[in-house]
Length: 481
Image 1 (tube, rainbow, N blue to C red):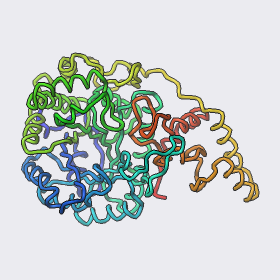
Image 2 (cartoon, rainbow, N blue to C red; image 1 turned 90 degrees about the vertical axis):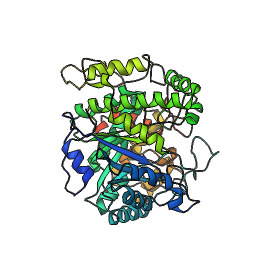
Image 3 (tube, one colour; image 1 turned 60 degrees about the vertical axis):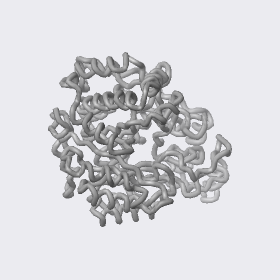
Image 4 (cartoon, one colour; image 1 turned 120 degrees about the vertical axis):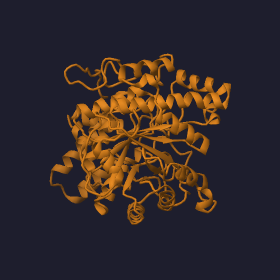
């Protein structure tokens, strides 16, 4: 089956705007997107982006390459303007452009400005991400209360609401990281994903990774929750030098298991050609698997030159013969990796039992079994804090009493107390990114914050929500503030 063919299992969704990518999603066509990075400042944009322009021109005449994805601040905050990059690549390729807006160091004014200028340049699709650790974030402070980023991080949920509040006909997507391996991390990712959809995200893009059980888990979760939203799986090819630098972990939020890291490094030890050949076989299998699992498309990153692009295009356009059906694909995927475990931690959590079994490709409400597990219980200090602030919010107390009690629980905190029930009145200073509407995707394999070895701040929010039977609150819509 060629990438341009329609998959019967794709979800269908309606969009109002005249947007070619939206039309493909609406029609259920499996789409391939090419991801290109906006370069750092230092050279004029046409010079710095010269190779990206060459790659964009190469895919201009390939109909099943549905568009290009332009990153924002991927290498650092001192990057070129993503709108200028989008315009440059759009002109070179004639393809629809998906422009990423990163929350790193972003204010609402920056988000509104980027969205407005992108729209004026003909960009009709935006992907909202919070972003990983900024290169401008102070280091070396206390793990208990890490110093904040001077400009902060705009939460992707708020970015979605902000864009739609100003550009309502823009197709806005949100990111989700399915590569989480404990119950709290996984549920928090899915809860925030549902919050993004409720806020207006019209499609989802995953973080990149290789654990196909996690991609199937994501699709089954959406089917279980009857959330009909297109999902694009983000895949990547790695240079040999990048593989050789791996040490049991890789990208924030996407850790690698030791067995899979060893496979990559054994491939790279032989030669550059052998490493790329193995990766292309893997990429071809992944792309075919994503189609069979019901994804709406793939987004491929890490392509740095024309030769790699040609190889990637060939691998995607010519799926392995073993991938003609789901059962044969599962066998081919396992054989290629010698049944290696992709989970980076022992006793890894998967939400469903019997994932990646040859006899079941789709979620079946009558036979699919959930994995049992309990959310953590809140610690006593958090519970007392929540109970106290919840009570003073319900009773008519003098203003000075309310202020004094609040500051007793959150000394020297500059955050406003309006609507703090959304995060159960916990102090957002405990999150280095000051995120209160859900976690970023960067937590480590054991659930600890990407800044330290402390648990993610949102585990505490989840514990309170579970204790009070208010889990649904973590999935609710958040409009533009």
